[in-house]
Amino acid sequence: MKKSNYSKSVIISVSIHALFIGLLLWGADFTFDHKQSVGNTIQATMVDPAMFNQQAQQIRQQRQAAKDAERARQDRLEQQTAALEKQRKAEAERLRQLQAEKLNAEKATREAEKRRQLQQQQAAEAKAKAEAQAKVEAKAKAEAQAKVEAKAKAEAQAKAEAQAKAEAQAKAEAQAKAEAQAKAEAQAKAEAQAKAEAQAKAEAKAKVEAQAKADAKAKADAKAKADAKAKAEAKAKAEAQAKQDAALNDMFSGLEAENEQRGGAKGKHIADEVARYGMIYKQMIQQNLLVDQSFKGQKCQLTLRLSANGLVLNVSQLAGNDTLCRAAKSAVLQVSEFPMPDNPDVVKQLRVINLTVSP
Image (tube, rainbow, N blue to C red):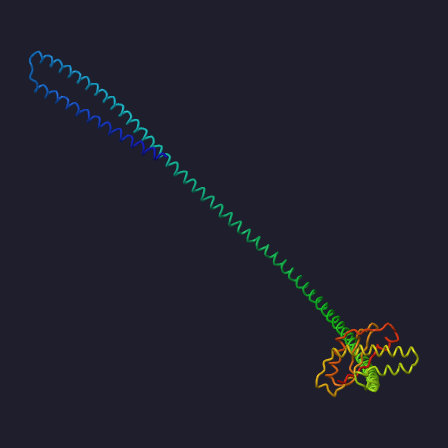
């Protein structure tokens, strides 16, 4: 800051001196030109005496005015010069004081810097000494702490190893116990499974034997039943064949003969009714029977089972040509329902009819 002020003061002083010199030069030139101009004017003017006196008076007045003005200018210049000189001296004194202050300040700064450096050096040395001491103490403390930690770590490791050994032993004992228990359970399970399998095998064998026995009995029963049925059917077939040996026109002749043997008016009435309804049934079946030339010389024996109201319950083939029997069955089924009388005795005679078809 002081160096900047000093430079500024020097610049101001130089500027003032330059201005002062310029004013001196400008004043000298102006005065010389003014006098030269007046002399030339006097030499060039040619007038009469009155005008000359008047002009001379004017010239004198002008010269006096110029002298007064010059004197005033010189006074001003002297005053300005004195003021500038005074200002220059004051500025020089101020600059000298500034320079002295600057030197003193620089000296004080250097001394302060030396003291600061000395203090810093002393502080650094003290700090280094303290740090070295602290480092030694920290190292000693760290070594002591490391010894304590190593001891604690060794103790903890020994304790952990002992605990791990005990746990491993306990685990081995538990595993051995578990394996023994598992082996015993597996053996018990295997024995139970073998026993269950043996029992299941025995039960299955008994079941198979019982089933075989039941199947054999059922087969024997079925065979006996089939034999009995076949025998009954054969007997019925033989009886039906024996009873039905006439043509379609004579299919109720057996009923009529049976009724006639009963004798009496009632028997005769039943026989007449059976014969009459037999003719009706014959006509209804004949209307639906489709006769083919291949049926000539063939026979078919059928058994018709009717309900009490005349519905066809069943039509079965006893014997004869299959093709002719199928045609006869179809003719019967197309009738579907046969008319029935009101007399229950007649209805009873008409419930089962053995029919022989011989085209």
